[in-house]
Image 1: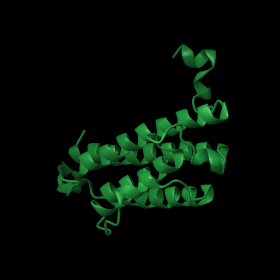
Image 2 (image 1 turned 180 degrees about the vertical axis):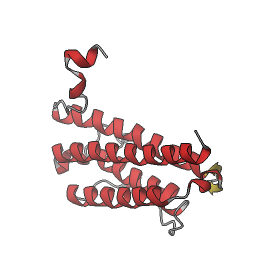
Image 3 (image 1 turned 60 degrees about the vertical axis):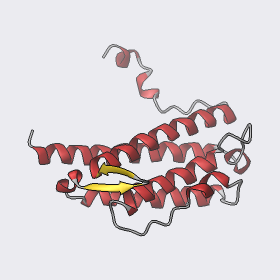
Image 4 (image 1 turned 120 degrees about the vertical axis):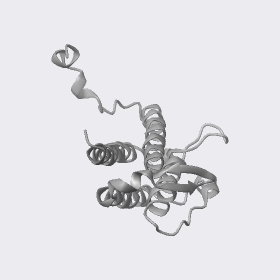
Length: 171
């Protein structure tokens, strides 16, 4: 496979994965009450709301700003110090806006830029590594939010329901 084709596969898969994870976060936010979004068991734990703010900050800093050239306005400490203040609908809109910008960036990013070097949070990374970091980081915190949603609601979210059939288990 030519290098450009492989780079395009990487960019397309990264966008698809962020879209899938964003949809899962939307499903979690829809199931949670305002109180549950900001609930924390202990002071050293992050509420779902903090994790959503953190994901938005991370995507903005690592992709939209560092790769896309937009101003870096992130104040990371605020993502974790928030104890409310952002309503469920506001968090959902912020997440959607951030993902829309990231997906648009991935859709127009020239494959040739994947090898370009950047300094982000003091790390010397390629554009490919920055995108990989964002997708991996987004996935990790999405898993935490899914777990918290299950704990707080007692609900089965059904993200893998399609694998529950006998036919799917034989593949």
